[in-house]
Image 1 (cartoon, rainbow, N blue to C red):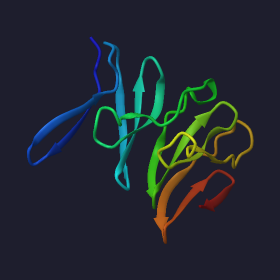
Image 2 (cartoon, rainbow, N blue to C red):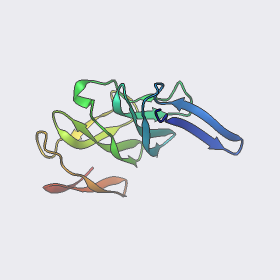
Image 3 (cartoon, rainbow, N blue to C red):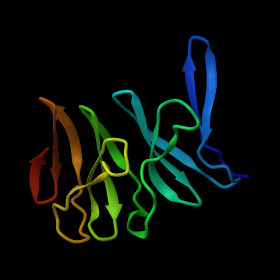
Image 4 (cartoon, helix red, strand yellow):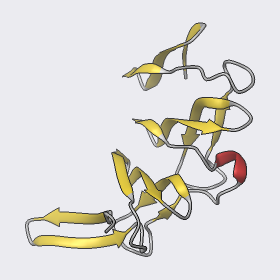
Amino acid sequence: MGIYSYHFRVNATGTVEIINVDKTPDDSSVEELTVVGDKLFFAAYDPVYSWDLWITEETSLSTVPVREHDESYRYCVPEKLTAVGDLLFYTCYDIFAGRELWRSDGTEAGTFLVKDINLGITPSDYSYFTIFNNNLYFFCRRRCAWI
């Protein structure tokens, strides 16, 4: 028997199911809920699409993956979701760049790799995401950077 991942909204009037991310009886997972403006981003896994970055505006119709899958993005596993102003920054694996820094405004066109700091598939090993003066600071392999 699998574990289903449901997305709920809880307020003073009760608990309401928004969406079941995985509608199959296989395991699924939801992690790293992060608010950016009036949107909620999260990382979700389902056995059909693997890991993906999702967004919701609190209805089942508005709860969707941020971008369409392609093979370069299939093993993304979004991590370190961090809000900076109206943008979400996160790390994600891409077969061409390895694990690097990505950004999203909640649209497919506005979701892309920021920079391949360690060129090629060598990951940059990001850590210590910190917001200061509306900039994202972090440490990574070979250099320290900010956005």
